[in-house]
Image (cartoon, rainbow, N blue to C red; front, side, top):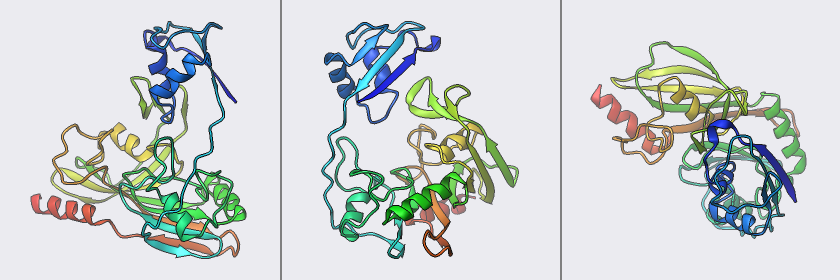
Length: 306
């Protein structure tokens, strides 16, 4: 059983109880939260309330989340673009549209399903049944390199390297607008967007430190190609930071322009480079994956317009 407590911020008064709780975690669907409310697992100021209760400023909300039944994650013979593999680590070039690991209502077609088949179940168990081997994630509609641990030793080492910021991660993004300066650093904290808690935003309360370094690699008439290097790894970090400085990613369905006039499904973002120290040998591994076909075609279209 996991216990949560919140004090409602003044600016969120008036929200429905069920809607507000479901906005706090993308895995807590509205239906799931309503079930918890009916089971008496939600209390407001020590009293149970119905899902349509309108929250008031200062309300203390408590939630007891029951243990999650283990997902049955089946191996699937899904082709993988493997860029490195040995007994400890595997690095895959993930295609756009593939989810990294299973979640509620989504137990098939993920990278984990494919890895379970390819690795014959030989993946680190630290992440649990739903996330074997997974030490970091990239968004469903972001393509590129992701490293996966086959052993617990490798898992612990890679996680430690991520925390120490010694993993090299470079992304290529294509953004709206012409960025005038060649280099920049975005140092702005990221947390849930108070106006829409399904999204992230630069906020200064209930947020985490986030730093993105960027270099402009190419300019077009109305777009720029940017290399982004992560110092931290917050949810949607590059997408949120680039929007924050006024250059949202082309094709981004959440943080981009409402009208997508370019033929790309999802944000134009590719995890191009990953570098890490091998957990067993100490050798430095550095890998690079070329841009996917849809981003290459987007560049050709932008060049033709310029």
